[in-house]
Image (tube, rainbow, N blue to C red; front, side, top):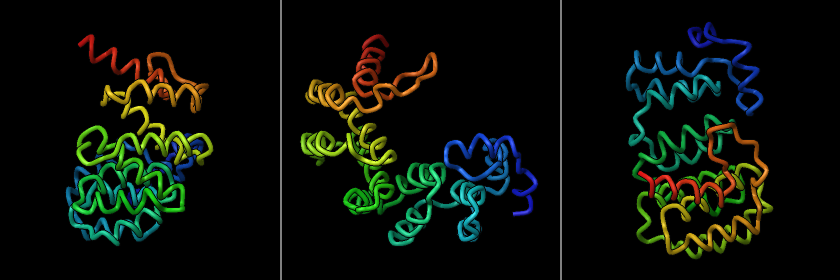
Length: 214
């Protein structure tokens, strides 16, 4: 904790806080510490219990993802209220854990929109990598009915799922684009030059074009 405190950079904190993340440690330096420490599951648990955002990010980097129990991950996700910790926990730990599918189903139906967004992130992973058993048409029904009025984090996660369905599954592409056009979610989202817009119709069309050109 003293080492992390010594790495605190006020400018980095200022940038991070604009995105809802309350820490000022450069992520490259954080990864260098993790590389030195290597995997230490018990240390990861201790770092997580501090409640400190930088410590929790380090915990995610040095933990053993498959070693967590289902209920432990559920508690951790509900405690992970900053976007970076939430995203890293889902992508670097939960997706690699044997309880991922059980958690996906439980979280997707959770009344807390931040928890539900984690369920949608896991669903998007399945849409792209293991779609067998998913009812993609039913997912599109839910997105069509709920995405426009969803809170920001949940809306973003649902939009990612919509785009992945359109990109990965040609039989649903026209409907995915149509839903995106009618809901117009993230249509005016500021996009840096050279980056693809998160607006689903543009995102789907661009990714499909790239694959056809490659």
